[in-house]
Image (cartoon, rainbow, N blue to C red; front, top):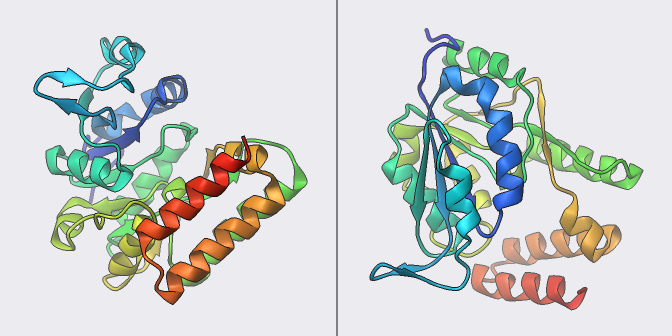
Length: 248
């Protein structure tokens, strides 16, 4: 049985020009350092022969220069690949995948205490709330959490955590540009049920506000439906970013 004083969690954060949001998340993680072995930030800035492309953000290196327990890696800017790359380098017994725009409470430490003290579940995810007070966004968060509880299918926004050995045994995230969290969830729920902590994490409402709340809900349900029908992740990636960019 473990306690919160065991440093056995590797936090993996894929980023792509997310320095400002990341700085807030790193501050949120500080009260949880007793249980965190390392924080692996994986930048989606392309690097080749010692050179980086124009997505390189020097502010990221400055931010991480004096951060305790933080390591910076770089690889191609595909989120699944970034998370797998971070997991390959991780030393912790548990992998915790977080988006850079996630916000946390120090009370989450008790959630991991509960997870380590039980033996039934080998992975889990958090319920979420969105960072804007719009009532429709509260409904969106409720539906996200409800759907995930019913289906055991999670999104990356929900802070998935998984036993490292299990993650590697199932092959990690599939190499695809979208819906990689759905495929990971399918593989994990075949092994054990998900552990759902008491506390919630907060995620950004940016995509709903930028594209429109109703339009985003409709788009997300449509993309999930056609993915279920067998449309390729590559085609869905084109549709998603084409629609999102058309709102700008």
